[in-house]
Image (cartoon, rainbow, N blue to C red):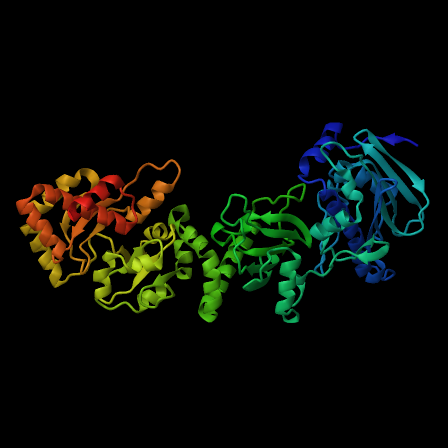
Length: 610
């Protein structure tokens, strides 16, 4: 028996294939099962054009047989088999694919696709095997042959007895090492898990003996290829659970079947509950990606934009350009087209949910609204137009979440801006002195309680040509009789305010009479792009650059406190300084900002009590 060398490449190339192309060793089983499925498909295609052949699907299967005692794993199929020449060509030449040749010679139709294209998948068997043996009898041939190899040193081919048409691959599984546990490829339940993971939707039965009973491991007909009318909500929920997409019940599913420029099927789920690790670095976004029912990637991140990273599900396509190991995707036009379509479908579903099932949308939004806001802010607002209609904020008038569309639709004609207020809770915002003037005018205020809210709105800038305006902004765009009085107060009390500003030094940008305060004595307003809430958030970040809001101390000149302040200014400078510091500290406390020197503050309070 003559030993032959691999025709195509050197030992180094085979080693490269075995050790570098595949990320996970368990992939070998996916590759061998896919090859077995191809072999059965080839009989199917021949039967379409050869009247002497009949294709009875029940006669065709793939069988996986582990043997712990002898450390062997067999993958048996009832497919088309190989002649001696085909063994030489397909197994003796690395990267020569019989499936690819068959595909080019035959018109593929009826929704079947030959999976293997590159001819390297077979060699993944050497990742887990010391010896690989292939026994095959070709359709229409009387003689069977055995191909055997221990790796890069070559292979042998010899005649052998085999009754039935088909192929049997026997792997002599390696012994365990310190780094690798090869026993898992001999365990029934471990093999079952690998088959379910990668080959669950191979169209032919994959059989195994589980606890001495022969069982079909795979589902065969994927749910996404079934007619939507045949499926119930329970079918989708069961699929969600079977695929371990989450422990919750999905709020909505999207079933997509596209047969156009790019053909693909997809089932997507909008979860109900947020995963525990969703806002951590450990969370991986992405959809399962299949090529003709064979799992290629467990998480394909390129199919989802970051702002829809909460979506779970899968995509199956015949038109993807795979790389040589079928593990990764080439970044090509087909993938981008699928991703664009999926993004559009998700948005449409969310808008439909918002319109028709408001409670469900609000439930979803409480879990994932933060991610949509991140999407508005991310990449300098490049996605803000896509996401703005999905945003919701708590309303001062409605006492519930409202959309920007709903807010703008009920704005009075004289209202120039969309007003918002920021704070830790709705209750704290309700009590903010800065809301008094806007509320008195009858204008609705949106309450921002998440750290991302104001950053997202600053990026959004406007909605339907209406600019966003913080209630703490220096100019609220509201002209009242008090506004005129405030300007007069500023002029009348210019010396007093200048003196306060000198006492506070660089702590505030200015001190002025307030036109927004009604019942409260004092508050901060801000000028510039950085608000007080933004200052707090930025300061809490690592490596903060001490970015500060430009604070203006506003004094209510109609409040009794101001009369005491004015009297002290005229008669007692020490008391005036004391009152100025107390008012400044009061404004800090209202905003939830830290007091620089609490001891000094408490001493000041004691001074006015004695």
